[in-house]
Structure formats: C-alpha cells, structure tokens
Length: 141
Image (cartoon, rainbow, N blue to C red):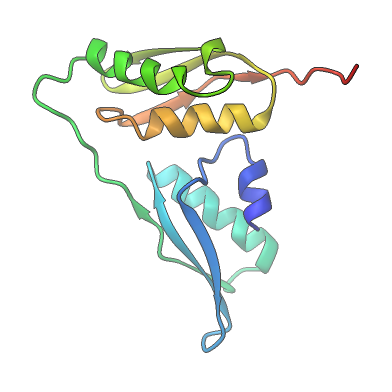
C-alpha cells in the first residue's frame, strides 16, 4: 500500500503511515496531509489494495499557517527556497496566486515530482498545490 502511495504522482504521502490493528482486523491510516484531496486519494489507494471496509482513516489535514503580511510574492519566495534545496528542484518554477502554488517544469522522475509537491505543500502560506510538473524519464545509457 505504501508503495502505491509513493508511486502515485498525485499524492504527497510523505507524512502518511499505514498500520494493522489486529484487534480490529483493519488497516489504520495515520499521519497528515496538506489537503482533503490527498486524504481522500490515500484512502482510495488503500481500499483498492485491501478492499472496501478493510481500512479506517485517521489521517488529519495540516492547519494552514498564514501570516498577516504573507503576500503571494512572499509565499512564492518561500516555496522557491524550499525547491532550491531539493535535488532537481532547480528545474521547477513556482507561481503563487491567492495562496495557490502552481508548479511548472520537467523533472526526471516521479520521486522528484512528489518531492517538489511535498516541499511546496509544507511551505507556510500555501493553501493548495496545483502540480503541473511533467515527468520525462531519461533512458539509461
């Protein structure tokens, strides 16, 4: 299940954990996500693996942190700084409008796409990430 979470190009699963409670014979999902869509997608993937009714979600949505002086420009600068420290993050551009961060660029793999999404989603002032990154895997030499 966690492998499918990580393989999903649309889900930031960095804060999620799945565990089995023997007394309930159910898989329990724990952790946090940046938005309801991630929580729903994580549950859908888990139920596709384990079956309907075999999963219970305890996933929470992180609270939004927005300061009074958080203009879109300030938030975009924070998001760009978060991307700069990622391997491959330099290929990603970010724009912010009304605290919605949009990612553009071409990245070499799904892991970089997800890492970029996760870094920006955890940036103070970002309410939502519109991930428009394209994965173009390079052929092995």
